[in-house]
Image 1 (cartoon, rainbow, N blue to C red):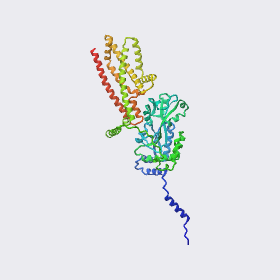
Image 2: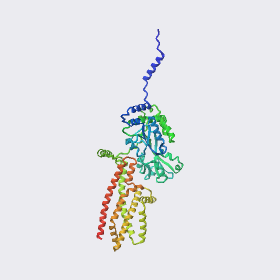
Image 3: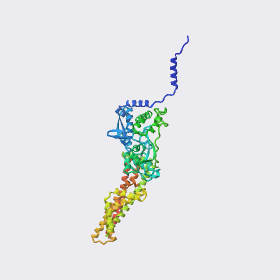
Image 4: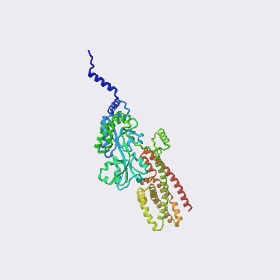
Length: 547
């Protein structure tokens, strides 16, 4: 009897052998996400990661912007735009509800560190500088570049055309460091949303912000007729961010969700719904549909993910000691002291130049104040009406004008004569401070002249010297006032220390420490000025005694 092997059994054996010999299929991001969620839910009694807390509480706190058209705005209590819609899609994928928290460029990273939001999706460019502050989610959910926008009549072809110009930016924008390195001045705003208005009212001639931000405003025919993008730079991918500690599982979950959203076109559909550019997302969908990327480990595959924008700044030779000093303050006093001006060469250069320019400004303001005090005192105390009345008119005008207005007018006159530069702004500030304080001190001198006349003193140079001595206290007072008022020169772009530190904090952290250092600097400078002025007063008063 012939034995026959059943055909069905043979086919089954061959199938099993083929499966055993074939390479194992990589785990999909969907399966990895499902396993991660189940594991996190099983640990509700002792949550150790933000993902566990989110899943167990059923709430996801999303940090979004509210003043960034198309990407994040709010109408009443409703959040609109690409990023709020992505947040809702992520929450739905995780099976939780979303709570929105308002953030801006300056607050989004600190709020993550303070555990006030679970993740930030707030137009945050992923650059190497921020890698030490936040854990970015891969793959990225959008991409943009920074553009310079200006009136069409303004000629801007390259960086040479904007050197020494003031550019309006938002605090925390990653491209601010490059703008500073190009020898430009920065005018800072907390929200990008005010930049178009500042262009319209001519507060700003140039503004720098993501092209994605200005895309909405160029849909307005009136705006597009008046302004245009001049040049673009610093192309950067956007990343969702989570805190660097306590968020490992949450970061892993968001990595997987982002892979799935790119692969399935979820990001793309949300972008089309919100009328934003889709070229980047269309390319990303193709990438994440490739077999080598559509795996649980795709977010770590260098052939699939984009690199962060390299914005690493050249460190100072003593950056290690600065870090040690910061750690010492934290350990001994519990103070979070950060000294960004001593960590990178661009920041150090700005800081040193700011100190030097401030000292020049203070010395110039003191000299100008003393000089104008003598000139106004002589003219106001003169017996000639041709000197006295014009001097009185100028004095009353200066006394009635706010110092900021005097600065602006001085800068306008200076710019009408010569092209704008840092030196021109410094000279204008010195003249404005000298005129404002010198006119007041000069009036005190003239009143002393009148008093001496009433006492029967003879006119002439001797009487004027006595008047200077008698008004020494008033002169000293306005000299000190001139020194204390020098930081206001930053209003017209003078590159003194306040302006330099403002530029530094536009691309680094540590605003509180930075401005405390500014306070210490001016406190010491004013103390020195007071000491010198007291010496001057004593010398002048000795002159009156001798007389």
